[in-house]
Length: 132
View 1 (tube, rainbow, N blue to C red):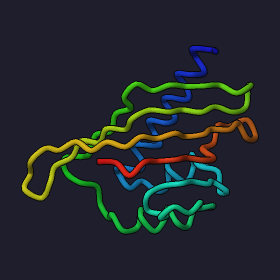
View 2 (cartoon, helix red, strand yellow; view 1 turned 60 degrees about the vertical axis):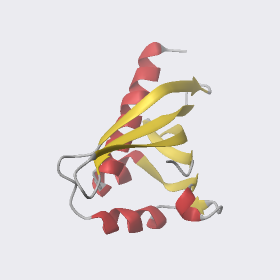
View 3 (cartoon, rainbow, N blue to C red; view 1 turned 45 degrees about the vertical axis):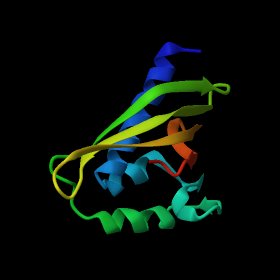
């Protein structure tokens, strides 16, 4: 595996996570393929295909929290599948403040699939746990 390519994918994935926790739809949309598919807790056990389902949640969150949430990939693992597909898996740790201003950390197990389409890496599928 190319260490440079693995690092590039981790950086793209981090940009994606920062876009999620900061409700940055423009960046999220640019990193994702329009036909993205997923299994996530909000989908209640159903596979979801396309961006409209995700846009709904971005629209709900409004302006970013102050101070901003911080997101960390714990023990990330990159598996390249040829030169045009990769799987990135990790535990996502999200630090934020609760309603009383007390720091808290949530966690979710995530697997994200990236595919090179038209010369660019695009996020095409993910599976995310319910988290704690």
